[in-house]
Amino acid sequence: MTSTLALDGIKAKQQKTWASGDYGAVAALIHPMAELLVQSADLSYGARVLDVAAGTGNASLAAARCGCDVLATDYVPALLDRATDRAMAERLPLSIQEADAEALPFGDGEFDAVLSVVGVMFAPHQEVAAAELARVCRPGGTVALANWAPDGFIGGLFKTIGRHVPPPPGISPPPLWGSPDRLRELLGGSFELTITPRDFVFRFASAAGFADFFKEHYGPTLKAFEALGDNGKALYDDIVALADSSNVATDGTLKVPSRYVEVVGIRR
Image (cartoon, rainbow, N blue to C red):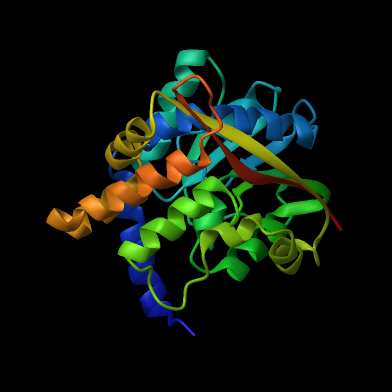
């Protein structure tokens, strides 16, 4: 079992990881996942909505477009600042608050809907984070999540990184949140779940273009290369090979479907 002190250290490293690079550039690519999730969640106008581990606000802005009263939370202030900038640019109302997904500073049943798009899945203590999602959602309310699947392309990317830079011991892999069996363990006792597999397609000029983009912008990849230093070429080559092997394009570009699961649950 991982101690509380160890988890605190992991969270501190995670905060630095997600604050590095430019996650907003990655979030801009995958924004359609949030729009689709919010439509599947069938939110009502005026609903009180919490976006957990909101990042730069993809799900928050999608819900705000539905006329919801949205609060975006994350434990990386710089990401929330970007969410605020985006909301202002689109003239959408949005509240933000710094908060840890494993210790949400809200009352029981305070929200009509709780959202997270590839966010809460990175909380180191999965059971605690899942319990918090359930606690702050009112009976009859909705939880809606989009999580990368362990057998998908991004799941494979994390496995590739892990072969070069092993993750901290005792921490469950984040893509387990994309496993239906694990989701039922985490949330099935509190929610009536509907789990739908989906694919998001990454589009780049080449496999090397994908590797370059994620090396520069995506915090987990950037930090892995920093840790490897001069030994990073092997990781780079493995990422290029992974992208090449997953490519479905026939026109010389890169099109990589990445499996994720869309989860919509009604609070019991």
